[in-house]
Amino acid sequence: MKEISPTEAAQLARDVYAVQDSSELGFLLDSALFKKVEKSKPSPHSHLKAEVGGRIILNHTDGFGVCAQGSNDDLFLIFRGTTSANGGADFFTDARIGIENSTAGLPVHLGFNHCFSSMLPEIRSFFGAHASGGKTVHCIGHSLGGAVASLAADWVVRNTIHTAKLYTFGAPRVGTDWFVKSTTDTIGSENIHRVYHRTDPVPMVPLYPFMHAAYGQEGHYLFSAEPLTSGEAHKMAKYIKSVAQKTWGHLSETPESPYAMESAIESWLKSKSPIDTSSAAFWRWVDSALIYVLKKVAMAAIISLQGAFITTFTIADKIAYILAKGIDLAENISIWVEHLMRKLMQALGMQVAKSKEELTRSLISNVLARIIEKANKEARNALRRL
Amino acid sequence: MSFMSLFTKGKEVEAVLFSPLEGKITYQGKPVTGAKIKLKVAWKDQDGETEFYQTDNQGNFNIPKKTMTYTENPLVQLVIKQRLTVFFENQEFYIWRLSKMEEAIFTELGGRPINLICELTNDERTVRGNGSLGGTRCTWDALDEAVNLNERN
Image (spheres, each protein chain N blue to C red):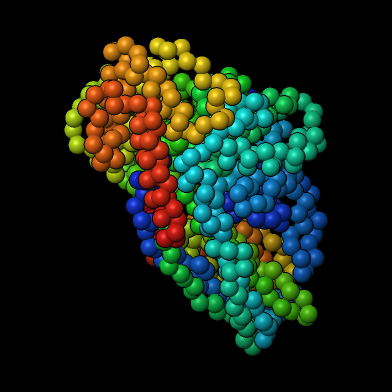
């Protein structure tokens, strides 16, 4: 099954931002990757005749995609993120994000799911016209576009006879553990190319329970030096530079290992060093530690997190539920919840809890809600300043 | 927890909305004199701004640089839509339409075009510069890439 190169994928992920209408689609598709079609001579006062093997899926402020026929009997679904004409990237600022079920009945981020669902009628229609043979469908996107591409790739494999290749750049986390495990099995981890810069903040959030596909795989980690707080490492132009002249095999750097190793996470949790919330490292540690502690608790308590429980509470409530359960468990589990809560309360400038009895479910929920609220407020401020 | 709490205030940067463009408009090889040219540039909404220019009695036109200053938001891709049309014999001809996605000057083509000629009977050709994509009826002899492109890393 042929896949496209990192540079080809990155160029498409960026160029799709330039397409606003069907006449501009012609420029995007004017490349060796796409099926050539006969163009009739345009009249002097009209556009280039848009005889292209593709169409725009949706032209909407919150979502935009393109589907096209490739030159190798393959198909393309390319999604873009937010442009300057669309205003704020609201889906990032909603810290109290809900979860709903994807088309496959798996829990995913509500905003991304809506975006993808609105494009589904056009996507179905496009596949209806290209039903023959088991083709490769390249699903590509940057940022929000990457999240939608992930949902699209999953949909393609479940609902068509085709196979999917997924290429994302700086994509946020799309779905929960179950979505990600399921989607990784469905698409195949070798078909998933998740590219992210070390200091790109977007792939870092939301935190648990949202995770990245491919489950268990580290994705294509790229070094970047730009400070996390600048967000510079999220730019598609930077991804294009980072992958230039490289094959997928080249892009297999191991992420900085401290974040992955359990013993390192435990050391971090136990450490009493001052907290710097502006540092990239701090948030990576929080992320790793939160997942680590939640898994510890879940495994110990054999908590089932599926189903109706998921849809009724906010993220903060859900996490608080799990952590509160952890407090009630044996010392070897509860101590980690204590350490984690201490770190979070310290980050908030709160009085750190002195004993685990103080860490009630409502306190934990309050701490989590306050951090999310703080983040939400700063997000609104950041956008207001634009 | 959301990463948004990590964002410092976005950088104030200057972006070139339209790089200086000078050239000649022809129809079937003959200069189009005294013709109205419309330039539309949009980036933060669909409408943008429209300006008008005119070719002189040799069919030449000269459009100066347009810039703006804005606060960058790393979550949002800057897309500057440029549309250049010429009014000739009661028809409006597209000569240039392009999306510019980098802030520096002369990224549309990747350099300053030398000897630009926009023949109205040409087909549009796809153009890919530095982070730009579009089409034009114009042709040029060469691109001067030595101009200060100020590439950002």
